[in-house]
Amino acid sequence: MGFGRLLVYIGLAVVLLGLLISLGEKLPVRFGRLPGDIVYRGKNTTIYFPLATSLLLSLVLTLVLWLFGRR
Image (cartoon, rainbow, N blue to C red; front, side):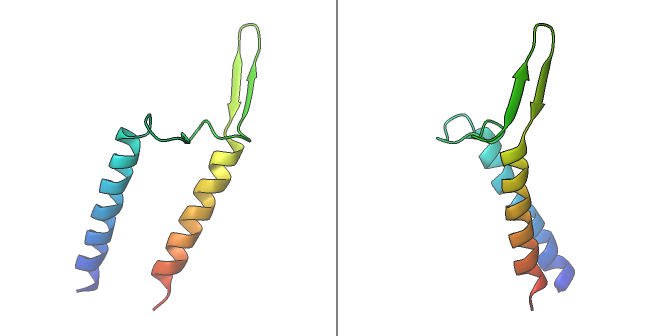
């Protein structure tokens, strides 16, 4: 029973992630382009460090795993 429930949750997460990716261009805040992401564009190079996106993703994943870890 526990494994089946886990598969349902994983499936729902994949569907939500797919919707987020497909509707990503229409959202007011695009992930990977948040304020706080560092972009350096040189003459021949571009260095991109998504600091704010990484922090937001870490916060969301921590919250989700904390909620699933409680029983």
